[in-house]
Length: 405
Ligand SMILES: Cc1ncc(COP(=O)(O)O)c(C=O)c1O
Image (cartoon, rainbow, N blue to C red; front, side, top):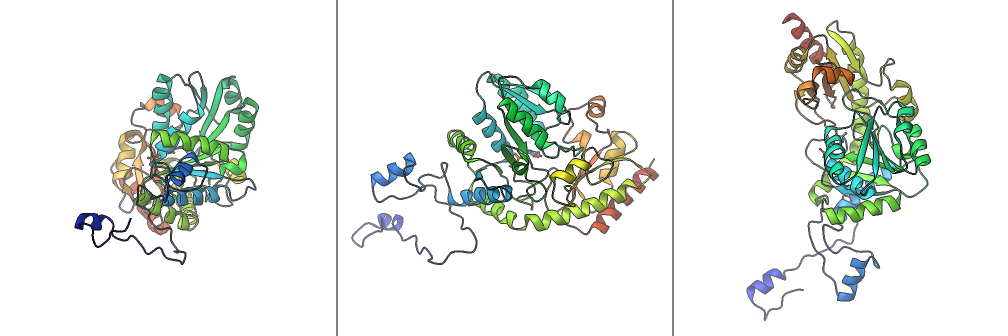
């Protein structure tokens, strides 16, 4: 309500004009920070709340900037599909995962999940959800017979990742989709390590695709968010759970993530090409015992990636395992000068981390070996720097850790 000259100064201050609303379409999605919206009548307000009329009422329910990001991501993930793909945005990748799992399960439900999934997804399934009566069997997701054997009548969800950390194992999404369809379960794929610029799981039969948008989608290590996309009925049920639980993506973060999508294919194409060059060059060094990268012909997922991923793109995470134990891996990471030792992945900077003392620090050497991870493994998230500099950096660090004994 606009203030009048006969009103007091505070009433007038609160009523100062908020316009103008430009008639021209802004090229970028504006940041809508208002947490609430004004209605001309109580009837209109009630109609928006009831869903009888499209509109915005309150920021936790819907926000135009966050919705623009969710729609843009859904359009990317559904690029090759004729059917409608809808999206929802969240405060983090874990918010997207936890809200989705809560929306899809209830007491007595069963989940079949990849044994190698992200640590907090594992603890969510193995801890919190178990307390609420949802049980999970963790299986080797590359073994479709093991997945089929684990499925029960009460299996509500099969959960996997397009590419798993840190070995970059590739999931057979069409094979898993067939098992899920036979079982009447929902196939949920966390595609954080791939991004829609490498693989779009919905095109290969997944029911829902999830992201930590904090990684490739934001792409600059400066925004935290998550997203889910899939068919409308499933995504609407997840939206209802999101409204009850509350992890709505803030508009400033949504703006950054929406902007990130614009350069996602450019960045990821470059990062994938550099990662392929990096993996091939580093694998030649005598101090290296093993390199995990699906672009290398000997990798478990090379053939599958060729079928499911965009041509020539195998992701941009490369795990390099020097000979030796944990100390050798840590010395290798500490000897890097271009790559930075840091958590996370998917940004413009190349980041490196010794796996056994960071993302997988709870695991003993034996447990790491059982998961196919060497105690000296160092995970690289390849950024947008010049690949020759990244290669020289890694080779020098390997030389140094060899000469140091
Ligand atoms: C594969 C995967 N999924 C989910 C997450 C969680 O994302 P966030 O940190 O945005 O909650 C991560 C974070 O590293 C991840 O690597």
